[in-house]
Length: 269
Image (cartoon, rainbow, N blue to C red; front, side):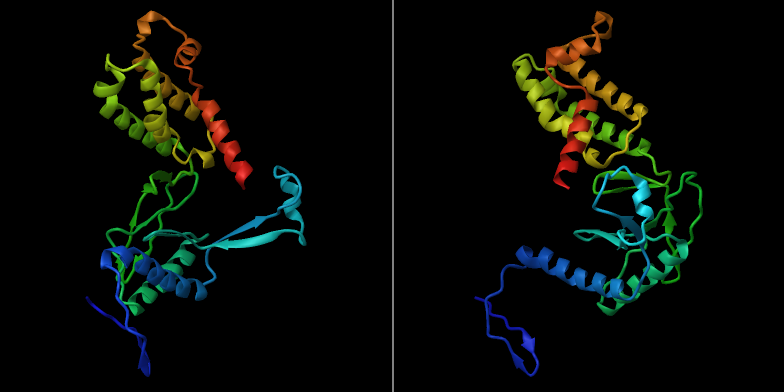
């Protein structure tokens, strides 16, 4: 058995038997990375300032003009495991933040991968050029990237994200088509249950935070109904209305699922 001790100058801790490296490595790295992140936050005032109130009607934006009842929160980073995203209101602020982060990583023996680090400017036109350097190397600017299975666009719209969700759902449907959805050995109820458990979550992933337009709902509903028609073996030439397709499958339209998810999230806030 292997025994270890932690050096606590001028003495050592009592000996103990360490756990396998694979068991504690993710936790140790998360703690280590949190210390690096904490040092960065303590040395900067950059970020995105959010003004909010917890009283009154949420849709009454005029109440945010008050000088006494409004709270402020500075959002600097979003962290999930070893994925880190910095946000600022200006390119200069982001450059300062990245320089501080690079210096903190260097102190702790970490090196940032320039190839895996990307910069994106969020503006309606989506064509602003931002030059951010890391250790003298220019970071790549992109117009969209995936973060936690969600696609973020520089134009601040959902078009890329919706297409990504439809693509992911189409891939999962295609993998199960031959053995499940087109199978003659399974009941319709079973096929619908599999669709609801596997394909639909791919369509609606992270939809609780979406701000959708009618075109997005139409695109999602079109794919949703296409899948249900395939499961029900209904051809377009059969001239069956979409409402009848939903009735036969005993499934709601996409808009109903979206509303329920967003209301459920609002209820939990």
